[in-house]
Length: 370
Image 1 (cartoon, helix red, strand yellow):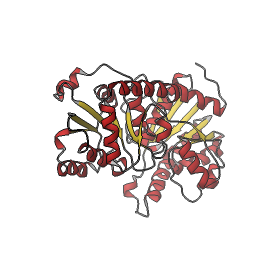
Image 2 (cartoon, one colour):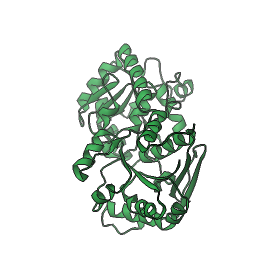
Image 3 (cartoon, one colour):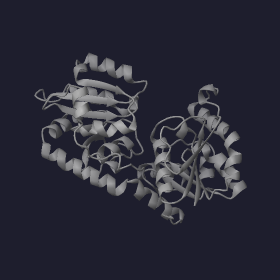
Image 4 (spheres, rainbow, N blue to C red):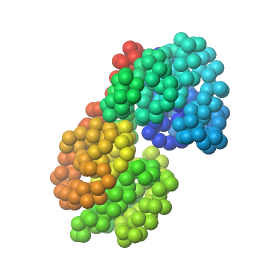
């Protein structure tokens, strides 16, 4: 098949949806399909092998009058379609694959003029007037988790097919402990390492993880690495200072994808205490793929990622529960090894890109050439 993956931000930023579009593009190309990515004027650090990338000008949402964030996103997306619509039509694609509801108008118009079938993959609940009508006109409707699918069904009276986010389990895998990182950060024998890698925004709940450090057993030597950037970093640093745990904390800044598995290789546990209803949790699955036991909040679609006996789920906004889980986990090497091994197996069997691409093909009714 010939498929266009149409998503403005794939070429302008990094995030969950962007990782998904790159991952599914790479997996489908490996399976013999012709895959093109359409995005906003920008760059991709690592273009998937066998995938062509086309970028076009657009009006940044920051330049759109602020009548609400959804209005700004819609206008931004529509501005891209002014330049990308003609190539989409002339490309004679079998499928147009979109990931944001704001791209529904452009995709449906391109479909009407070219005959391409529209596939929409929901990653959230960004509903707006017209959503209900437009999603009933697409060929296939997917959702990244059952949690999100049920949310969509409540709003639009249609339940999408669950197609989980994928993980590159060849890249994210258990590695020998990185001697280079041990040396770089002067880690001591017996020191327990915690890792969180995500955007530094309030709803990721890292403030509760930092607060939990004050409640962890005093006999444990702890180093907590936080990777990522975001507007909440200043508040997190101030909280650590106020709680007198700054010496246990290391802010790493944004990490290249290739460096992330090395940090998981030195981790005893990964922390993801979100307070918002995340629809999936790609960072959580990546840690699990590396064989690291996770402590994560029992919200949104996260319980679909952290299955029974693959990690520990705790209530949101509860630093005491986080500390209790960590005290148990960090003192029990056997449990850590069991949970980490189970986590790796679970992710490989359910979220590997090969598994996801094969299900996608099956649902849209195509057969891979590979």
